[in-house]
Length: 85
Image: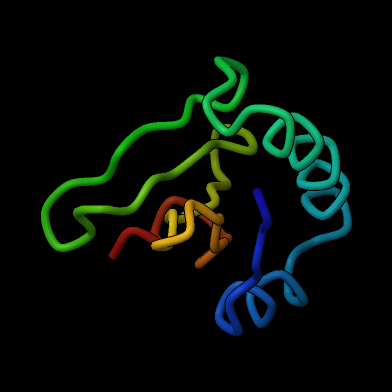
């Protein structure tokens, strides 16, 4: 499994507070081992974001991702809960 970062993910990542960057680094290690680890609270999205998944960094911050046709992972967005809009 390979993981790719979208340009929108990278743009948002650069704007994150340092504490959230550190939190992402910790959760990223868990995610790379198992994207559905219970600690991440990974779940499918619905509606206009059908086919996408999300996992939690903490109570405010989330990461949206998808699986591509090769079963690789693409991290699409990172940010506060309003990234779903």
